[in-house]
Length: 570
Image (cartoon, rainbow, N blue to C red; front, side, top):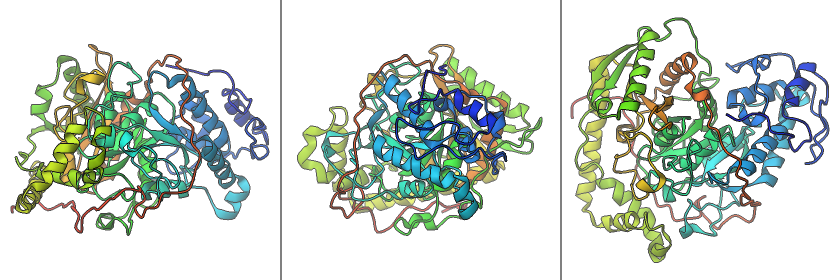
């Protein structure tokens, strides 16, 4: 695990920001080298509300190693300046990303402007006039290279979109920007989010291994402590598989909880946008600002509103906080695990039971054989615009793109039948919860005990070979991937999926908060060897022509998949 590494770009040691906070001195440091506007405001003594830790309880000495809720607490209290946090993240990224390669581009000029604006919102004068700043204000962020940012490149980590400039902001980024978050850069994705490898990125725990996909770059920059928060997408485990592989936490929310407007699609009726953090508190903090109704994405208007004040951020604690909770264990997946990860999963079940939870074996409903019929057609309807650029796809991804385009010849009745069977599957999933009186299900986060990068270069997210993940995409139900330790055989992280009923993110977050408080595997960080890298730096330019924010032809559908809580037989 890393520690303090010299001076921040402000000229102040990273250890110094805490000692300065303790003194409560006005303008404890002048942020000179990068032109901060004056000295920092006087530290405020009160602890932040809404479940953030007290600033006095935080002992981390390098700002890059602060998790999101710790950093938010220090930013809100005035003990940490947004520029100083950004300095630490940029410095660590350029010093260590050489072997990992998690970033595709960074935006320092834009980021420092946003950090200064966040500092103004966090200042005592602004707080006294306008009220408290949003809890995510000033936190650095990585966006998966599918989320549009007006005037910045958007390439889906593909040569196919080389030179593409976003025409507008994705709704998710607009929400986070409006809340004062600081965009540090775009992280790599498996090309167009098609696969589970993200083979151009090394896993920070061992760069010979895959960070998972398709949100592998987002998971890698989180695990390496380059940034405290990131966005990802999940069409077939693409938030959960990287979280398991890299030892971080992700929340795949209910389909429609977070808008996908302005996000390059893989399949419109399975794509979920969601937050990634080191802990579930980190991810839940960002979910509260990322989620909500968007008139440009009608699915987001269906479910209940985001809870007032956001999602819970702290565990209730006590000896048996999970008392009365029932957990379904998908036994067939557990029995198929390699020995080392089977031990980790069994230890996780022991933890659930020690905290008062009851476990029962369950069987997920059988996936209809034709359920993937629509996936290829939806993917093809997007990728057909690139038929004249097929030679620019990665060799590992070109066959999938070509097959998807060819699948547009599938008869429409086959597509409609598959959609009907998907609805049946949703009802059966809900009935499994009702029949067993479940609060959540527990599913291994991966089938394999770590995978080398090139071993899965051609594997699509639709195959399910890396983990049992499709149940959450086809039902639209929420799922959280939480770390469950590291394999004694490979040393690689392993995670557990905690799944629930549609629209019930709060229950899952509350459960995982207790589990992570009782056994904080998420706090372990990889030892990353110095490997300097000149990460491409880009400035904002003229936005693309649009009209879609992605500056691509994003036809979508006149109808959308909607999650249901019904258990009726159909």
